[in-house]
Image 1 (cartoon, each protein chain N blue to C red):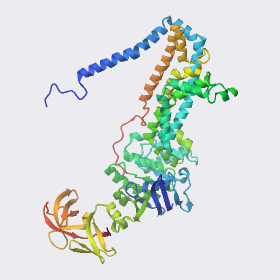
Image 2: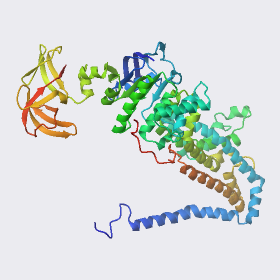
Image 3: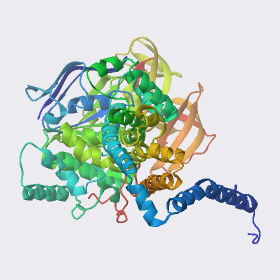
Image 4: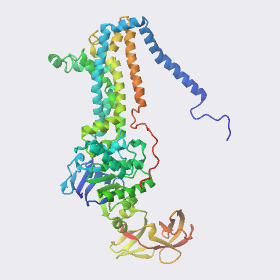
Length: 294
Length: 339
């Protein structure tokens, strides 16, 4: 065979390769990396003491607490909802199954601000349930319940989206096998279904959590932006920024960013564990003696 | 345990998968449900297991009506086509699962002892700590069987048990399943679309087509006396030659053959490749060799008859014959079905 210069593989032209890689690297640095660097340099522009002082401010602390509490409620509820919905969609045959899947995905495509406004019309004083709730003394809007509801709306698809393809691929065989061996429904769920979806489930939960903590649009409409009362961390960042408290705004933003980086790290780790795939990493080579049934 | 299906019906949406099937399976019998895809064989198996509910009819286990007993309490061992081993459990944990979730309390040592016994039975000693992804397909099949046997089922049900395995493994496992069955004497029902597998393994073969039983009997009965043209064709290679029947005599290219019991009119003569002999002259159907196919166990001729129909027949490997040769097909045995 002729040695020396061979034609490149399809799509592997050196000039195109270099240009493309350079383009992506430069754009990535400009779009993603640079802003991150700015956040941290600005947050620490008054030194660690200044950072600690802004973080220690009661309003900021309250915003952090509110964000965490919101996540602590919204994420578990959406997790249970996600498992239930994925189970219903993949293991049962019923009319409107595909439609349900589409409905659950709507929050992905709808602008969060639309969700916020919609909640205003449902639970607001001029809204459908507003007067009734008001006379019962239940406060949903401009309070924690509204914030949680709006966050849940926005993040409803995350867990379902991770679970449905996996559970569809796994089919019903495992559950049928467990049941035919005498396991109860709960037993089957906890010892067969759950272990097989755990990585995908965790992955969905991680993404859901990241979105709950970072949600701005929907929450900003329903929370009323009351400083120290209904301000979540993203809303607080905006408030501080508009007050020309640049360091404070960036310090709060830095906390959100750290949360995001932790989430990404968790996501990468989960992907290594095989989230979205059913198999376990093989610990030993499979034995090559399939026909030894003498 | 004796199993009885009484006029069982199953309909999916508008598609009727099983039409009033009645079947008796004697205690300790090994029965094959054989049919092409869509014949309802897997649906019948799943109804016996309780994984699917019958829309009509009854399923009896011994004297007990099991139709409405849920799968969990029905006491069947089901082996799935793709094994359905729990991927997050070891082989031993898979086999022990049924005992662990059972209402009958067993100590850890009892479970471990029984798992070890079963591993020995399925010849997988020493593989108890492996995960299903770490063993071969044939080994997985055996784990699935051990897992089903662990709960002492009244009946063993296997859905295309060897469908996903390659030919050699399949033959070995077939023999082995037969041995296990003979050793345990458990009533066994299995589904297959592979005639060779059904005939090789089963005491009795039930042939299904379009949700109905078309014939049932021992391998000898279905092979030697196929009830319909479908059974004849489904069980193996066949040649079909057109003929006319009058007064119990079929005439085929000037040749007359006994067709007692067949109504007058056009008929089809079915012949296996071994039912024909190749001679240079004599009584028979004149034909020309169009192709000679050599195989390890013989020689197959593809021929064209005088009336333009094609047929295949097996001849001894030392037969001297070449494409283009003219000769005569001698009919050794055949079956006639009204067309």
